[in-house]
Length: 353
Image 1 (spheres, rainbow, N blue to C red):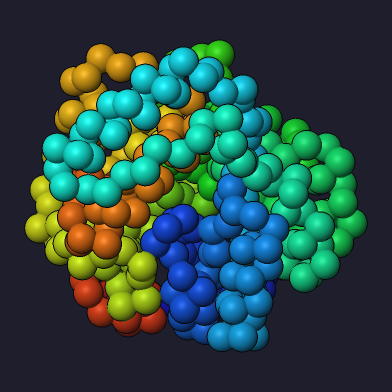
Image 2: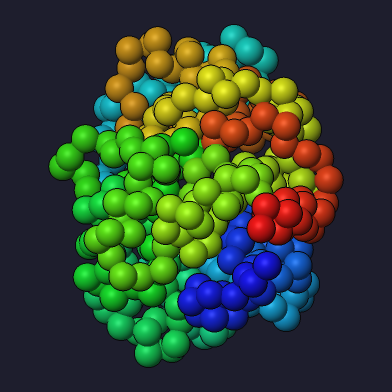
């Protein structure tokens, strides 16, 4: 099978298979394993401090000499509604107390948020070859600076309109994220309803409207699905959930076990953990917050409010009170090395030729 195409040339990789950036799960070891295997590892640093961003980049560089991507969150940071955040904190405090989870209320007024603009200089100074982004579009000045540094830019679209906007801004490739994808939605047209288009419907429609290379993202876990994505107009695929159970993943053991045993209907779209729509395995926390009737603050405010509680749950290996992002094809996720999972995807795809 000839894997070479416009996307592999653009990204300087052997196989057009990209490991999805998954903040909190992806590690430098995972990123390096995929890049070393001939794909493109993706390091997620969205919302992290410049210092932490640089630390993770340097760690990844120490593990691979192959290209890897860094992923940013391209969103605006809203003002904090203090009364709303206070009501949510009171609820979270009582929830934690009822379930034997230590939870110290953060000072809402002292919450600190980092923008992608705080991280651009680091990416340029470190000569990161590929920058992917989601939740929005980088500002014109950042795009111009990155382009001048020969950085390949990949934006995320969840509908045709978003893909067209990304092409108009001069990105080099577009990740088409179907509604079945695990984790946060990349949607960024905020004055319209959340796009809920399945990948198999979304891919050909975007391919008909843009001329850029397209990556398919959403419940991709086998060679058969990869082949289908190629047939519908994708030049590459972005794979996430099947790497969450890998040896290099930072996911807690009970999360990895839940992935292997989940059913196709086990995931839901929820704002409960972060304030932004995301797909994950339904658990007790999602039910309790959803049924509380309490307004959920916007991202990244809710994300910061729930951070300490999720951290405590993870220390207890309690998967009922931390997010378990997963796509609709999560079942059967394998607990083995990321490189072996990657090689299996390649092998399965090649056998279909």
